Image: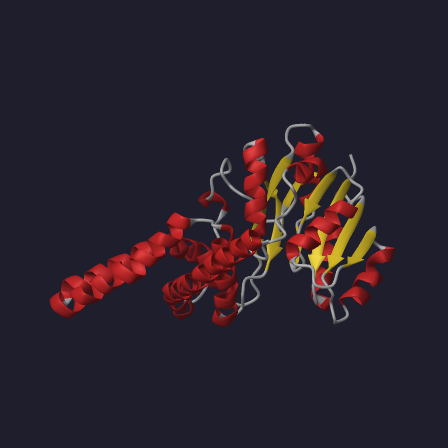
Length: 322
């Protein structure tokens, strides 16, 4: 069966080269690669043109398209019955396409879930990736919902669930996954089909990323309980601990350290594994960053989620008026 790889891009420029190079190096080459450009104003299209000699590229230009619209346009234009989706800014393992397409080609499933790994360039990014990304042993393959950095599905399955939700600009792949999961059940988990991507390199970039993710959650009405627990923790639990520190001193500090330790335990285990060989001062700094990164991410989510809820309410009002 023919397999079409689809990607959306926007002002990637030279950053798109590692992805294209990794596609050239696949043990199974895609039958076509359909790339939807959202209206790049840099040299992205020129870089893509350089690879037409090496890859079966088709480029669609759709100025103003969001990522869902771009993916849907690329999939609609794809000729293959199997679609493998990935993102600009990643590097694919050599067996990515071969392994990801196999269970679908064998008729075992309509959807196959790949995996993703952190590809850090700096010490800070090592800690960032270890703190915010799960490891392979952290997830349950039966319930794991893949990122569209690494997923494959039948084009007919995409059609059956109505494609990616074009009213969403973030968290769109989760909503798409949920629709596929409801229709087709659990996906085979192909952990050898790995997409490597670089974590955010600063707290500012990380804050923006998680603000937008949470805004998408609110707009899509996702993870209500998770967000409720977060607000409860910071608006009730933390003030209670601060009150204990003021009144009881030692017991308050013990409660704070216990809470931070419990909250940082699993990221700390991943940091320990990923910083093996670092000198002690660097390792201490790495562990000290964990609660800071988690705090920044939580604050970003608490700001972004209500904005998403407001956008959802506003959009629903516009539909009602229409």
